[in-house]
Structure formats: structure tokens, C-alpha cells
Image (cartoon, rainbow, N blue to C red; front, top):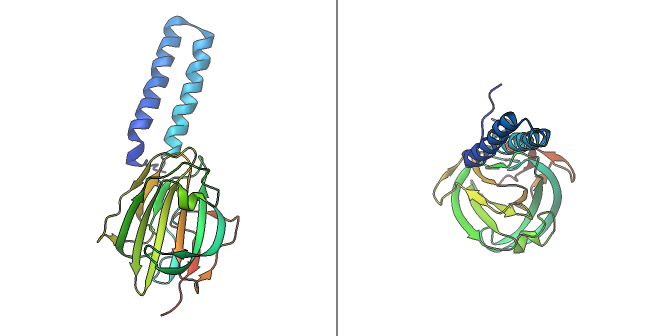
Length: 219
């Protein structure tokens, strides 16, 4: 099986691997058990960094009425809110929390055209907390999908300090395709019409581009 990695991780993987190799070389030359132990620790760290930035191919249900999960993780919140920036009205917000062991590449939940991209520099609160959706560093991408306006929001957390968003206004959004990455623990919110039929359940494990979150209403 071919395992690919997100390009944002290449530098981190290379640095971690170089440090591990250097410590191993030092341990070989000095014949020190302490250095051998340190070499093992740095090797484990290097392997974890590579694992964190893994970017597997994904395939799942696709269609104009299907909303797929934009992130790996756990569905922690389903609530109705006001979304004034792109939806400009009431919306269902589905929040997915990613821990440091999840794949952190994010994917488009629907097909459509990107009409809105906005970055907001903010705090780095626990991404699982309710107020992180409003106060944390975040990047929002609004997609016009047929008659629907779907917003997804990448949110930084306590550990995640770098949001990468590939999307630009006017881009074609392809359902399940990569649209960004958040480094080291975070959250993604999706805002959909209030009359959508939610198919996922609270606490359910999400797989980006595969798990179906909801069905959009016919218009």
C-alpha cells in the first residue's frame, strides 16, 4: 500500500528524521546506552511526525445532496446557530474535533464553487470548547453548492498553531478533495441548512471524504 504525506509535513519529517539519524550516529561512535535510548526516543518522534502528516486517498458516497465529513476525528456538537458572514441566517453547525493522532488533511464536504474565504487571527483555546468556534484562530471557506450555501471553518486549538487553506474565491470545490490542513490538533465546523437530514450521531468517528454527515434538502 502506498502511503503519501501532506506537502506541509515534508520539512517537519526531514528535520525529525535528520535528528534521529544524527543521534543514532553519535550513539554508534560513543557506544553509550544513554545515547542509544535517546536515539530510540527521537526515532519514535520522527515516526510519529511522519504518521501525523499522512495523507491517504479517500473514496466514499458522492452526490449533490450529500454532505461528507471534511475532517477525521469525532463529531462533538450538533447545534443550530446564526451564521452572519456567508450563510447569513440560521444554520446547523456540526463540529468535528481532531486529536493529534487523526489525519489532519481537510476535504471539501460538497461540490460547488468557493465564494467566500476569510482568515481570522484569534486565540488558541481548547478546540473542543464551545467558544473556540468564535474566539480561536480560524479560516472559513464558503461554498455555493447548487441552491445551498455551505460554510466550513478550520479552527486552531491548544496545540495547532498553523492553519493552511488552499481555497481561493472562484475555485471549484470537488467533494472529498483536499482543501487544507491544520497542524497538530484542531477542529472543523460545517454549517448546513437547518432543514438538512443529519445522518451522523454525536460521538461518532469521522473519516474525511468518507463519512456522510447529512443529506441536504431538495430545493
